[in-house]
Length: 455
Image (cartoon, rainbow, N blue to C red; front, side):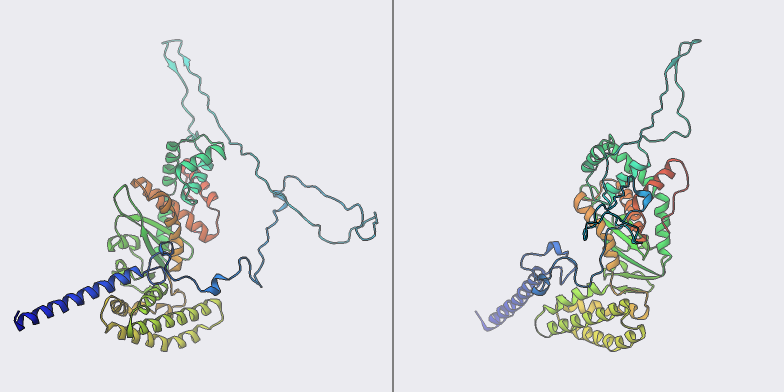
């Protein structure tokens, strides 16, 4: 082998070795990904993932010292079916037997039970008669005010809560309706109930999504949602402080995001997903996601790891300062003054990290390119630094997906969108979900305008 051939072989082996080292580094980084340094859920963490500190694990369960007690509220007198007044007979101190009113409030003890549920059944009897003139059989038509379905608004409301909010499977929901409520219902009957609920919520759903698009601040998020046996889809949410809307769509990119947002012009709070990059208005990137990115950069070797550690520490300080503003222990002007040097430090570290090589340095470059979306919460007091609100809202959809594996039809997708919207919006407003569902189904059955979800 000549000298030139040896040089070529050495160069080839060096190149191959560098490629293999980069591949090993990438695989090690992927193996080390968990819920603390990526967007993976905690349920996917392997046993080797870092656990909480020992101090947190030793924290006692239950209420902590100084916690405000939450006692069971006494029901008002009009909700009490039976009342027993028990007068004292013997004084526990002196065995006296004569008492007068001392002006003290009586002690009240209430015992609550649920009696066997009796269903309310209305029957229309239409005798079949024979015409004496021609011999034909005849019977009277149902009156115009007769129900169009064999199940009334109360039944539909309970079905919506069972399948749409409690993540109960259809078979289990059918058993609950049969055994707990004494309502004879089959799987097909349950599916028909869901279809009626879908129609009843059409107008309230449109009202909610239009209301959110008119707000000054909105949060958006998305999660996987299977459609049919093989089609992959996505469940999107757009929510404000007092309302939340859901959308099932086949795509996760800009097409779906455009349909969700439409004419929204307020501040949009999201993660760094590129599907939102088309949005030209004010945007706030979630700092909870950024903190996980910084944690991942912290695990790099050398100077890049030190940059990640510094960014992670700065993120913690920034979120704590913003939390003090929310709690009222730090004035807004003081917060904005303190944020000036921190903003400069974060952007300088991102620039420095972007000069390195590798995927983790690429995170620094990507975040630095979106730096104008990092600090909206410093300019606007009504904007939160994280997207936790949307993640809490969409959690109900995640739990539904885990138990049902998505939907099989467009009708099912519409049911998911509308019942999740009604449930989340009622919870945000402190309204009774079941009472709203009952009223919405009653109005639909009687061809009346649907009740409003916007309080």
